[in-house]
Length: 258
Image 1 (cartoon, rainbow, N blue to C red):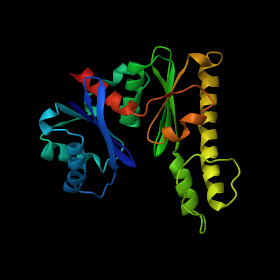
Image 2: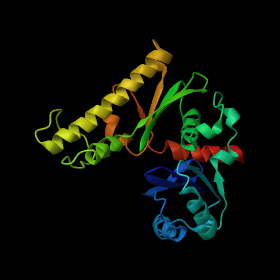
Image 3: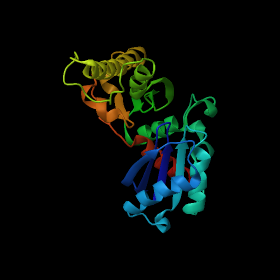
Image 4: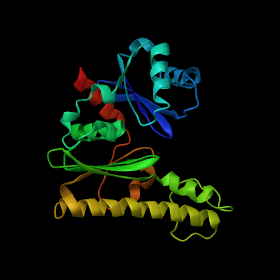
């Protein structure tokens, strides 16, 4: 089994692959103040619930965009799983993705998304990864990286509205029943959801017009990330919903490194 770990700003997503099949996955909070032992107290029971034995784990491969959390999880893997961690930045040959001139300026989660998309789907492609931030990673006909958009995530919209006002409440992200709200909560829910939906559709329209005008139907649009499930039903364009694309990309990167 290959254990794959994607450390994001809000969550750490952990999964296990046997061959090409994701046999389990779970999320834990990404917290830079937690100790190695505290992470162990959360992760080990979840591995046990998933019926994972330490002896089953062949290797651990990880992407991370949170510098404070990375060494904690690396040490957890070493101390409790008795394994070394393969970090994407150390094992991936960046020359395989032309136009990434400086690997230090592109997140390893984006690299994992690109590799997963190129391996599993046809190109050209746009990978929309929806988390704390949303990224729109665009691949050419032959799979080369040709650019990216990074936008604030949908939850940040809602949180900032709450944090910057004295009376507006924090409203959970969900699909509204109608466009116009009839009270403060439903008005906020509608504003956040439809405002962010229009951001997604608008940016996709701009990318398609700039890079693939007249060929829009040839482009694979892949939605991934924790929040993709909320918006997938209302995207203007035909999309592929692949919630575990980053994890799959990590598994592919490990296979390439062997």
